Length: 416
Image 1 (cartoon, helix red, strand yellow):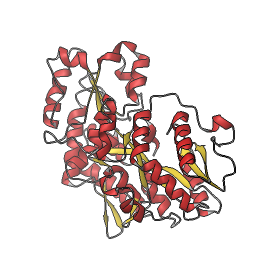
Image 2 (cartoon, helix red, strand yellow):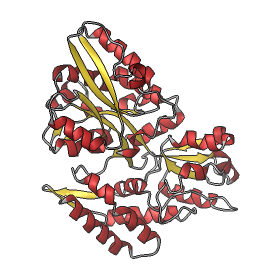
Image 3 (tube, helix red, strand yellow):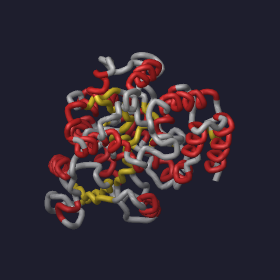
Image 4 (cartoon, helix red, strand yellow):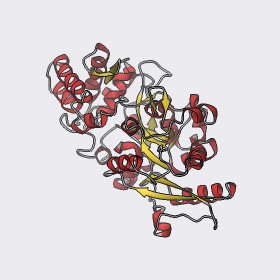
């Protein structure tokens, strides 16, 4: 999933740059080398060095080799690697990608380890669920990111709003107050379908449902239509384009102009905002996307990464130990602090308590969700009938008819 590494505000040097060959320092005379593929910008070189030195010092005879991969074209590369021989032992994949790789029957089943060693019952649902296929855990949650509300404190104060809203109804009221005198109450693009997904889930709806192995689009259910109705009300309280997504234009740059009260984004937007307008640095506030009830934030789409082990991993036993370490409490805490990620367990949320935006993400992540766990969902996203459906509704078309058309396209796409 392309959005899953949006949280990191740091400039990162890849592990490859440390040696020119993909190797990090390790002890001499090792008898086993565990080859780990990580994605660009997922970790800092400092984290990798510290993890490598610690792990190798505690595991005599094991050397770690990290290879940094690019997101562009990674699907084909991973599919080929897990189908061949002598490939990587551990692979980082987007949480919503696990299903397509598991569909090849080439992943190692980590269910036992998840229950016995990793405390899988406490994992974030938005990371754990996509890694579980037909009751087997193939993806081990590594880290998460999700959307929050980033707001301009000055504009809230000027409108007489002293604290963030606690419910969606209050959020609409506050946003309407903010939407005056040249200020946009919120900048929300018309095709921000990840945000819409959260509203649909919050209403009890789904994007698609699995009925005995047959996936069916579900945008036309009453619950999903209520989610779209709320999105329409919220989107109208600003001047976001109805026929474009949040990257066209980049919403962080729009917010940086100083006349937008709120955007819905991951914290990766923060450095973009402050670079474009340094004067906003101390004026930014954050709150979880409000839910229908006070004290319960809205469901949110969770992006992030899982770790998988191919069936053909040359050093599978050692690879399992590496995954246990990376997904365990010590290095989860280290990773979250270093990279401003949400750790993989709700019980570890306190490790980011001092990082305002990340701590806000962690609150929302407890109610995180992922896209439908179908191997074909990536194809749906490529064509994405949800976006034109949203535009149609925002431009006045009949919501039910537009939803039925989009649901039919989703059903057809998931059946292929």
